[in-house]
Length: 281
Length: 185
Image 1: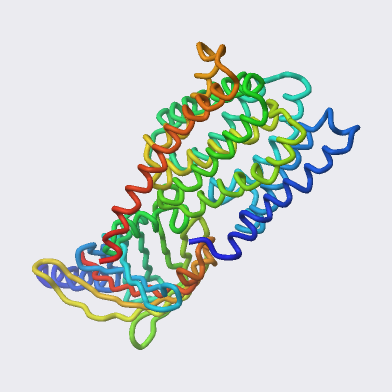
Image 2: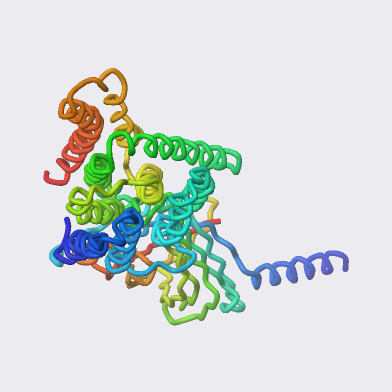
């Protein structure tokens, strides 16, 4: 259940911050670098509300999920280097580091060193492939479509996480979703592309929420998988459907993304209703 | 003469063993760690940690050398409702996957009229804090060949002191622990 404080700091504040910071992109001289302003707006709109909602975590954090607070800031310069230098491969060590920081304190309690290292490596590699796929997809479908898709996915993830026994992780996902929502109007108006830098920030945080949700809360493997593969199904509009009219392609794309996303939400909702039924007896 | 020597040795040995500390192991089946927390500032919710473990070392000759340890598995939290237990194990509360145990280890023990006063480290949710509790000895006896000893205490603490700051309001910050231990050897 979200309190007024949760709504204010976890939804309104990030949306407001993202929108206000992105206004800088309206300045004609800044417009060619609007994607950088977008990166700044998303970073600030995540970090400050997180701090207001959960408190500034110690460094190093005691709870591994709190690493997202510091990772969001640490990724910023790397995202800039990737955007200006085209060094997508830098994302691999970053994703490996974030996966290790989030999962190692959890896995070490139950798994051996080899098992933990294997799991972390596989997940980090999958995140990297996911990132490469989305960085190639984004220019094809346009920044606005990709922005909208990721916004919907983060909202869906927030709902699924909250129904998977973790309001905290759901709220964290909601902060990022609210930031994307706040930026959306100007992204659409200025046609700001979703370049590799901001994509890395969004993907890194989103995957961190899902990893934590699976390994520490009740996010089922199926729901996690449905959410992770959802954005990649937008590729369906890039093959045979390339000859279709733009509107039809857009609908196909969104439909393909919606199906797994909605499935995860329905499954989470069903499990939640069933489990809470006994609490009402 | 030889018999007298042997008897003297037996007497001295028994005196020595009487003065030594006795270590008991907490019996998970006869020990209970129950917690109470207010829900929505309205009613109390009770739950427990199943299968507590630990040791009780009692030194009657020098009570300050006695010691108490207790270990609880956060995965074994039990409030009678599966969904609520899953929620308690999640990052919203105990974060059981990252912090699988709650531990108490005494560092200073003082004898009191009713039992002992313990000062020790309580580690929960990755945070260690020093607490002082009054442990009442509820009894001592035997169960078959086993020597058993019982203790009980109540501890009031704030979960936010241990980094568990989420959902304060729906679930209160103040938590009462009622600990009843039976240990045997």
